[in-house]
Length: 441
Ligand code: S3P
Image 1: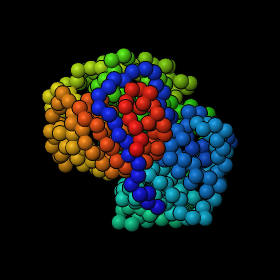
Image 2: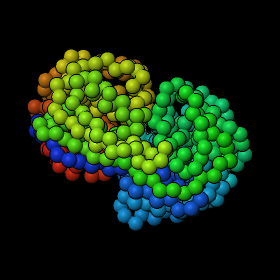
Image 3: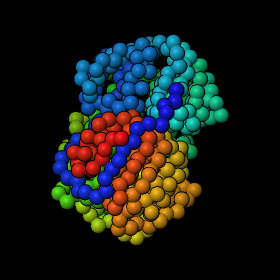
């Protein structure tokens, strides 16, 4: 169930980045396409699928539930949907690996089934809070048990769920999505109110599968009992993976760095606004909004080296940049002046405690900083030191520090990088192509 700490990178200091890159498909959208495809009637085609370990864990779990999934190519998937009520129980616990999104969304998908299920994961996932999903599902009548709020999650399938009117205590797309998935088979109208907007991929994709949803301000409403119709999903490149190169470009693109076909859903792109407020030269070239009103917007991003200035991050932008904050802290460490992020308590319950992991790494590079209960204060500097970084098995911490090397004056050795394959298979090659002097140890 748990993987040993493994793998490392050595990144030589300095250098420049440039050229044209396409990063792999969006993780959030790939998970959702598999799950909605499994619940739909007919065959769903997914193009641009992320073949990272997290999404493969979702695919394997759905296969264990009797869903036929084929991969005609590495990034193409065909899902033969069973229709909501026709999944079958798995013979063993479903292992969601490192994937928090997979576990939480599967809780909502499995709660209304006619069979029981158990969800487990790797060492990091087994420490993460699941009660935020189990609690509201119980209000719907689900029989679901965590262990001190954490996995393993044991679900006694209960096909007679009741819709709820629920105010989410934290802005979490995973909680919202799990409740929408359960709400699909609940009696009545599910109403969810968020404290602040979180990514809306589930709402858009449900629409593409023919489900009617209503949005009124911060409230989403959906009638239970609706059927999903199979469709075709084109997954854009993951903004969260592109983010490492957006920051790399701001730090060291002597020639323009172009990132193509990136998903720029406004509930994901808070980082662009933060960097632009710091003075970054980032140009967004929209590629059109795709087909239909549920489509995800896509753009090419053109980035040039920029003199960044520290900022105070508005708390409203935190949920819209939550997965990009690790690499944003690297931008802040290379900016002139001070940067302050507050209201980011959620970072403490990601794949690692990302506030603590980033603070420790910044300390190793000689960056003056203060770790706050819900954020970080950082004083930027012209040049960073080198040294040993422990990524704590967290993909985004590892990739963030690889980018930091562009402004370091000594090599960085980044440990425990195997989980980079959960979200960004091929990162080493892409980073080297961009110009980073990164070597796998
Ligand atoms: C995700 C939602 C976010 C994000 C995670 C992916 C999703 O988590 O951090 O990487 O796909 O719904 P929360 O819902 O916990 O904020």
